[in-house]
Image 1: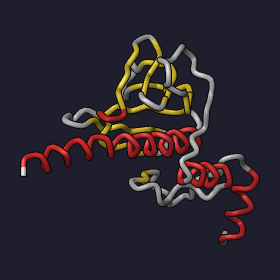
Image 2 (image 1 turned 180 degrees about the vertical axis):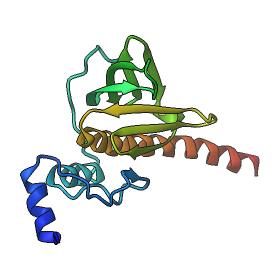
Image 3 (image 1 turned 30 degrees about the vertical axis):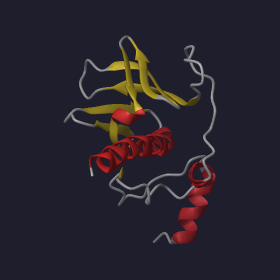
Image 4 (image 1 turned 90 degrees about the horizontal axis):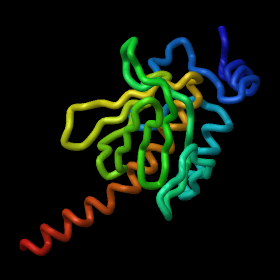
Length: 168
């Protein structure tokens, strides 16, 4: 039987680690991400407000910065679109044969289901599913997307709060 030390040894051998056989692959609150150095380091950097910066595949609007790019399959059917998931400071974007852009203020929640980044939108029952090839990319993408989503929420909450205060 493998103990904790065997797990740590195995994850040290692999760049991003792996999930155990008992892992469901669903991480709703970010508390059960794989125990590996790259993921732990990224999570710590995000807690300090340090977002990674990467080169965007397309020009961005002034003031917008790119934080994550990875090849993905968009959708869940045989006719899925292939392209790139791009996370910027202002937008979640899919760049492929079709282009999709969603402002972070429109995103209600970001979750991971194994290799998929699953995005639910505010005021909609629609889910956007982006399947990453390596599971580690889905982990990194979800961490960054959750951080960007949470960063966009105070602006929305503040505007609602100021409206309610003015109404009193």
